[in-house]
Image 1 (cartoon, rainbow, N blue to C red):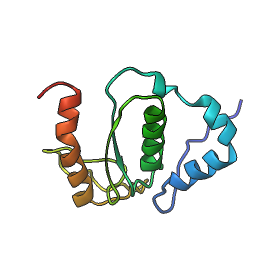
Image 2: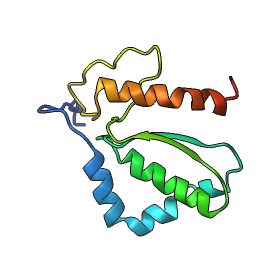
Image 3: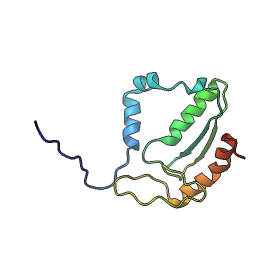
Length: 129
């Protein structure tokens, strides 16, 4: 029996957005068939997305969900920023430490601004306010 070799990576940090985009183009039919039927969900839906998300195309995906729900008569709130990255920073959170493995996009300032803009909507959706 062969001993397993531990996985390791080397090199510059990576982003996966382009991989998601190419996969969605190449496997469009399969992606459509695998889509969660969110347009049938009878709940309040809040989406928060950064346009500079380099891990995956969160803003285009969020906009697609909004369009699907709107077409079925359900409202959806989208809070977004073209400059924010993968992870919005909510009020009181410190900036995420830099990653040596991944590129998330955005900036500390843009991610914090998106989190601040989204926070009251998050509280409202959770019925905390």
